Image (cartoon, rainbow, N blue to C red):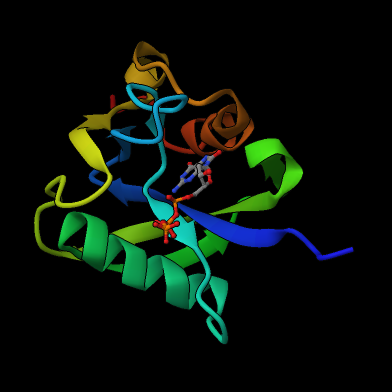
Length: 134
Ligand SMILES: Nc1nc2c([nH]c(=O)n2[C@H]2C[C@H](O)[C@@H](COP(=O)(O)OP(=O)(O)OP(=O)(O)O)O2)c(=O)[nH]1
């Protein structure tokens, strides 16, 4: 059996906030919110893919920080999602590819968007570390 391909999601952090991105495709996922990222290319590491995806999708430079514990089967089990936190180094995220809206969320705002269900455990883990902004 072919092992499931890896997808990296970036919990991009800046100023005590987490970035959420609204997907435009496929139809089944469009309009739901996710962590920006994507599939690993052959030979790529997860942190390497994360840096590339954030450059392509959002036009920013970011530094991967730590892996969120756990991994989640997505796309009917054909893919496995792993999530890393990442620090914004340069640039201001813009929805260049795959997304039509971005939102920076403080801890109290994390549940105000309709996250893909498979992203929620990782989002909760990250949100619990954001601090309440006070
Ligand atoms: N990027 C991303 N994908 C997610 C998340 N949660 C989740 O279930 N997925 C799923 C949706 C897709 O089936 C798959 C990722 O595909 P993608 O379209 O983002 O990957 P990609 O940028 O490499 O695109 P492509 O090369 O296939 O065009 O993982 C998430 O938080 N971020």
